[in-house]
Length: 232
Image (cartoon, rainbow, N blue to C red; front, side, top):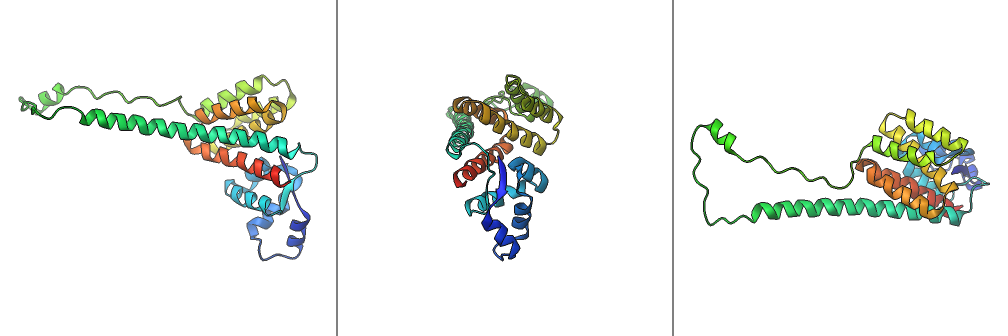
């Protein structure tokens, strides 16, 4: 989604409105209708996500002319964000249930008979101890590499120049922020060319393989898209 400043923003910049911070003015200045949300966040840093969200809600920013219909985009983004958040909550619930089961199993052994006193040297006593139980795996393996491979597979199905460009961006990304930015941009492309149900399935699966620390940031990007389109 391309971001553009509104007439209200232009007036506020000219009059140096005291209600706008230096960061707000910087965001408005670079929002010229030719840069996407991802472009602006890449330029100014992830800390601008919340201010951009507020500026959209307050009418200083809007989607640039020529973007898709607000209702259609907001609906798809909202469904994807909801599915992503549900997947995150389900993972947390499964982790809590498994931890509780482990605690109950550890405390369920009868305490009526005391274990025999250990004999032998300390080394012999240690050697006689049973091995610790394996740590159960919870859900699919999460990593940025897994998230990159999954999105590359999804883009492989799209026969277009833009999909090929996004594949190169994903492959060349190295840091966590670069990977997240390329994944968000790829999701926006899929939302523009695929059905809402397909976009929702891809978003949900991506949330299951992406490292947990990136899931809230991915959801925030989708929430900003939905808010921007509703305000346009």
